Image (cartoon, rainbow, N blue to C red; front, side, top):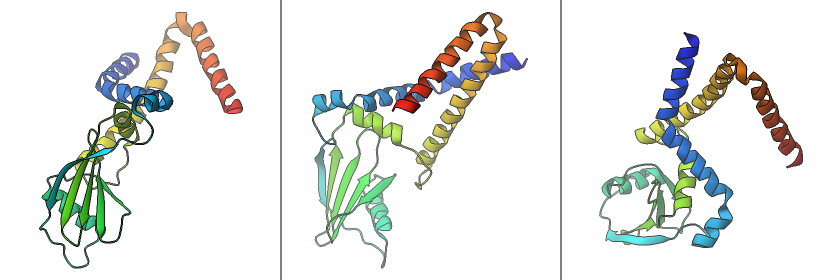
Length: 197
């Protein structure tokens, strides 16, 4: 009964989390092969291209923080979501709106109300690395918290897959000998890298 439950949970978790497995696999390949992508795209992060320029007529409450101002601008542009604020010139507010496919940089100039919206050019490696590194519960948006919960679930599933794999291996007597060889080989290689790197 326990074995059947473990096998089914092992399988259904794998099916449910397949997109995350592929994303972490491909993004790790992208991070491990920076040289290839540097040759493909050139040095530096992906460039931004102007998407829109307008006069923002909104207003801020007295003493509004930079974060509150950024949220107001994002809301008026229909771009609510996770963001960061860049250190810019005095009188300018530079908002970096996180987005998996097209991150945006929004520059608001207080003196004339000008708002320049730029969209980052898509690059496969930047997209994959951004998804790989996206984490945490520090944003105020439900979708970001949902992603963080799924990352926690993925980590728990990895631990479960390892432990349930050990259980399934031990149950199949015919595989015990080669299983020990595989486990010891993996441990030896890992220890080698710990010592030599």
